[in-house]
Every structure is written in C-alpha cells, then in structure tokens.
Length: 243
Ligand SMILES: [Zn+2]
Ligand SMILES: [Zn+2]
Image 1 (cartoon, rainbow, N blue to C red):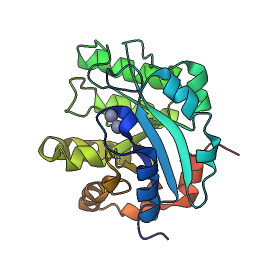
Image 2 (image 1 turned 180 degrees about the horizontal axis):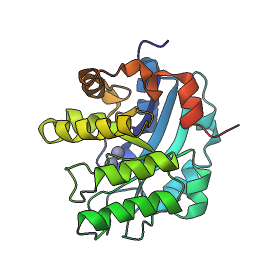
Image 3 (image 1 turned 135 degrees about the vertical axis):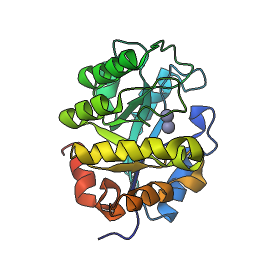
C-alpha cells in the first residue's frame, strides 16, 4: 500500500496562459513528490488564454515524454464544453489519440448555457458523444454553469466516466467549495463510483498535493488510500488505456 498519492491526473503548465511552471518544472516536482503517474492537461483551445490546437497536435507526437524513466507521463487536455450539444473544443481524432481527456465548463470559451437543465444536458451529452476520461470540477460554483449534480454524477457513473475531487477548488477557493465537494463525494459514494483526487495544479509546488481532498474524505469516513490516486492497480484500470 502506498503512503502517499502516486498519481496526479490534472496539471497545468505555462501553456495554459494563467499557470506558472514549465513542463520540465512540473515533471521534476512530480518526481520529487514520488509520483509514478502524471497527466499534463492544459486548457483546450476555446479558452482565450489557452494554447492553440497545434500545441495539442504536437504534444501528442512527443513520445519521448511518454517514455521518461521513473515516471509515466500522460499527455492530455482539459477540454472545454463549448455548446449545449455537448461539443468539445477539439477534433474527435485528437481526443482519441491523447492519453487522457478531462472535460468541463470554463469561462471565456463561448459556452452559452443559461440554466441548470441546459448545463446538465450539455455535460451529459459531452460524455456520451466524446471520449472523456474525467469530468473537471463538476458544477463548481466558481463558474457560472451550475448542473444537477445527482443527474450528472449518475450519468457519469453509468458511463464509467470519473468525477474528480478538485484540490485547487478546495485549497485556493476554500470557502465557496467545501460544501459543494461534500455533496459531490456523497453522490460518488451513493452511485458506487471510484474516487479520483486531482490537484489541478497551476504551479509546480502544488503538483501531487491532495491534502484538502484527503481532509474531506476523512471527514466522510473514507480512507484516502482507497482512492485511485494511491493504487497502481486502480490507476491501470481507470486511467490508462489497455496495452
Ligand atoms: Zn478547469
Ligand atoms: Zn484545470
């Protein structure tokens, strides 16, 4: 049994525009923290400050990154849901070629849903029609796109799409988010979904740190070591494609 998380599957680099560390810095920090798995997931191109589509096409060709010794680096994206039909800001082919696809709502992406039911349907359609591994910060009150949490989490659990507990939301945006993620956690338990913690790190110093997520889990009687992040077996099952 590992004594700390060995995987972090939601991390940004300077390519996201509002993040502060390079790819090298992020990978070094992950190694120092003892991570065996790290996903690079910069914002999709619909965000005004996100990298262009060409960045992701080229990222996908960087097999040297996928073959670094001592750490398995997954090359991915935090894609944006851009309309109420659940479309993402990336061609389907590339979504299938990247190692991991996180998807969610963000500001400044052109998304125009204006009600809980519209947002919920957009989210559910997004996971039904696209290859999505993880839903990012579901319904997070930082963004003006609330969803019906129960309907969304039930749909994700049914489809085998993971719903993250987001450390950045709990740490940086503390007061607004604890109750929200408590509800998310309760619903994940209710629908027997595996629990994934993500740092959503925007600077190398926070890569692999999940302390606020762990605090939330412990308060709900859940052992953090039961999460995907601590278990090579669960990581292989839920986060990696079959060989
Ligand atoms: Zn995000
Ligand atoms: Zn993010």
